[in-house]
Length: 212
Image 1 (cartoon, helix red, strand yellow):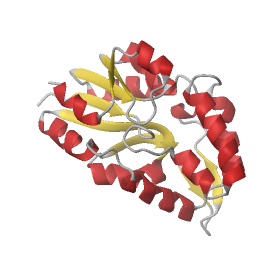
Image 2 (cartoon, rainbow, N blue to C red):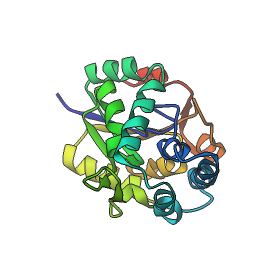
Image 3 (cartoon, rainbow, N blue to C red):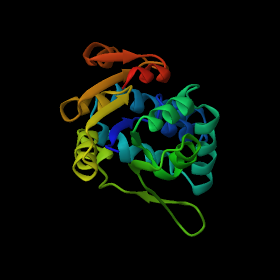
Image 4 (cartoon, rainbow, N blue to C red):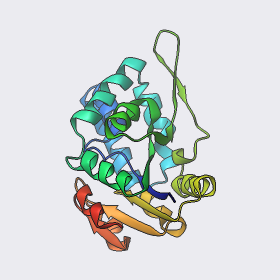
C-alpha cells in the first residue's frame, strides 16, 4: 500500500509540555525563567533557534536521569486524542513521524506510547556516570530551516503519495514549501503567526481524522 506521510511536532503538539523547559524546571525557578524566555522567543520567530539551542543546554546540563524523568512527563501530558488519532490514521495508510527540535531519548517513551517508530530529533550524549556530555549539534532541527531539510530527506527516502506537517511553532511553519499540506496546531499555544499563515488551523488532534 502506498504510504502517506504525516509529520508531527512533539512539544505543545503531541504533548502539553516543552521538553527543554521541563528539563530546566529540574534546575529551579531562575533557570526555568531564563530557558522559557529563550524557548518562547525562538518558537515565536523572534530569534533564530540556533542562537539559543546550545546555550539552553549549557545552562541546564541535563543528566540521563533528567531525560528519563521528562520522558515520563511527556507520556503523562500526552494530547488526549493523540493515541487514538494516530492509530486511526495508521489504519488508513498514514505513516507518522515525529520531527522535533527536542531530544530523541526524552521523546522516545512518548513515541513508544503512541506507536510511532521513527523520531527525527536531536541526540543527547552522556558520560558513563550519566552526566551531560553534549548534543548532536549537526542535526538539522538545531537551527532555522532544519525541519524542511528533514521533511525533504524523508520524502526522498519514503516516496510518499502525500505529505502533511502538523505543529504549533514557526519552525514547523517553515515546512510549508516542502509538504503538500501544513496544519497549524493551537491546542496548547495558539501562536499568532502560525495561526495567520497556516492553511488549516486545528485545536485538537482528532481534527486530523478529516484527512483521507
